[in-house]
Amino acid sequence: MIKKILACCLLYAALPAQSAMTYTINPASSYVSSLAPVWTFAYSEYYASLPGEPAIPPTNYWQLNWQPVRYALSGSFEAEIIYSPYNPAIRRLQLSNFNLSTDAPSYAGFGLPLQLSLSNNGELYMSSVACYQDFFDIPLGNNWSCSGGNLGMVRVDSGSLNSSGIELAGGDSWQLPIISPLFASPSMPPPVTDYSPAYGSFGYVIQATTIPEPGTDLLILGSLGLCGLLTRRRRAAGLQKTSQ
Image (cartoon, rainbow, N blue to C red; front, side, top):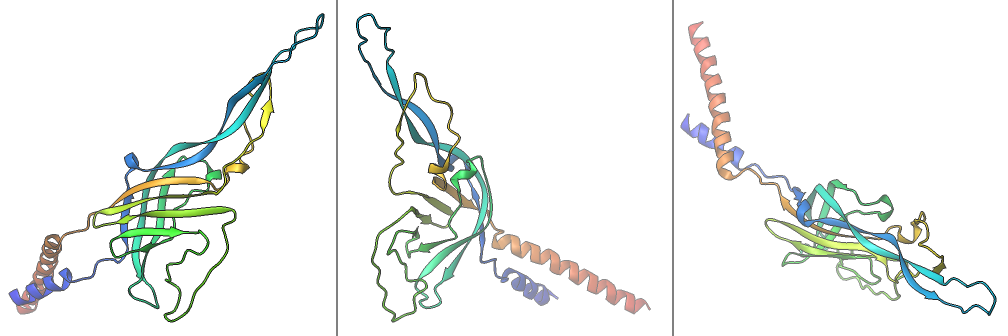
């Protein structure tokens, strides 16, 4: 009977863990940043009035600046290491099952990357910059070349993976700054309602830790309890047959 219990314990302890691990975001060190419009005073122009004419008030000029504002970020996601079908030495970290909570505006379009290149020392990186390639999807022996520049939005994500967690930072933004024309008004202009210049532009910083998994000792204890229950039921069934 002891041999059966030990065999049962080894069987349950040897069960493989899930390949994808769950990571919980630390809200104290994680955030989303987005661009918000702010009117700033630029300068004033003064003109001298002619003799006998009413005084000419100064003309004030305002400029619309898009400044980054931080927003809270919390929640969880899953991460799993996948290997290139063409070269087992090339890996990526695949993120999935996002359960994120943030008060960042919807026009920012915040989202985490689905995959990041994973180096041997745990560095994470992915970019939409022209000519970036980690050769994950390129068969061995194939030549690859690229030419050209970047147009529109450019996304870059980088960070690190270690035994206790994931650190990520990045975002999606225009390569050129948003230039707003000057607005002449004696007082500050009304609030902005057109957020199109900032659509899809965001940044983020994430620090996430793994949810602890049961240790080997807990697996063995659980296996002992389960095997003991099965043994008691089998013994009780044998006693019933004997009594009959």
